[in-house]
Each structure stands twice: as structure tokens, then as C-alpha cells.
Amino acid sequence: MKNDESSVGAIIVCIVIYKVENDGNTNYDWYVVQVDFQIIPGKFLYGNKWLSADAVIKLTLSYCPSYINYCIFDYSPTTTVGASTVGVSITAGFSGLNPTLSITLSWYYSVADVVVWNYSDMRNNKVHWWHNINEWKDVGKYVYYMKPGFTLIFPEGYKYSLKYEFTGRFIHENTYQIVEIWKTGTFYY
Image: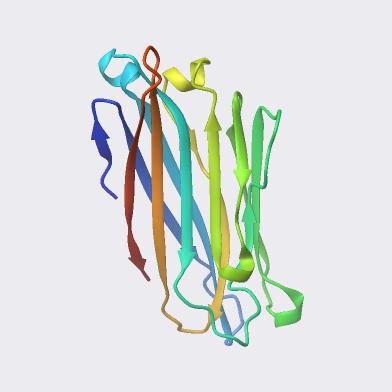
């Protein structure tokens, strides 16, 4: 995806989707989705007074067949307060669905001076994270990179779409004016 940029800053987003192949299950397909989101304040890019304040990630699945309880099977992180790093660990595979393979992917990213608020709702097929960046600390003045993830399960061969909304909020360090940069659309797979 293209980055969105103005004099206040920029956001760069990449959605990485891994499909579990040769899992021995002919009924379901598993996907692991990693969201790479970078927010860059104007202070870093241009030497001006704009700081990073918030980064919001929302992805909503278009449809989930009613015979599958939740197409979003797993997600991470959950809400964090006072942590310096967050571990993301997501699993594809479930004994109730009889797969012959179960995988777990794990990674970490820094949340020093950042609070992650989790508003995800598996019942409504939505993952939603708000990274509340402390703009007055170094994390608000330099490039910040976050990397949440989730797992999807669908009937074999099913095609899906994800509606995405990515928002970067920036605050002016003298006037406290807030400006948002966002990227929205639908990703088809």
C-alpha cells in the first residue's frame, strides 16, 4: 500500500498474509495476517513541530459463513498498559476442526511510552487497535513501527475481503492542533 504523507507526517502500511499450505485439512483454509504500520512525525521528516500522537488500525471481515462461529480465530496484542514490549503470538489450527497441523507465529514490538487499547470484536469479525503514543516522549518525535496480527479461518477455497482503516494522528507541539492522515479501502483475497 502507498504511504500517505503531508507536512504533519506520514503513515506507511503493509498487510502481509500467509496462507497455511499442505495442512492436511480439506475442509478449511487458515491465514495468518500481519499488519505492519509505521507512523512518522513531521518533526522527524521535515524538522517542524508536528509529533505523532495516535495510530489506529481497524480491519473488518466482509462476511463469515454462519456455520463457523468466528472467522477471526485469534489476534494479538490485547490491551497493554505500562509494558515496554508486546509479544504477538497467533495460532492457526484447532483440534475441534480436526487439522493435522497447527502453527504458531510469534514476534515482538516496542510499546515503550505507548498504550495499546484493544477494541477487537470477534463476534463482528473486526480487529481494532489504538496505539496511544506519548507524543511528548521520544516515541512521538521519531519513527514508530507497530506490528499486530490475527488469524483467519475459512471454508476451503473461500474468497474474502477485508475493509481497512488506518489512521495516524499528529499534534502540533506549540498550538496543540490535531491533524489526521488516513488510508481506507478494501483488500480482496
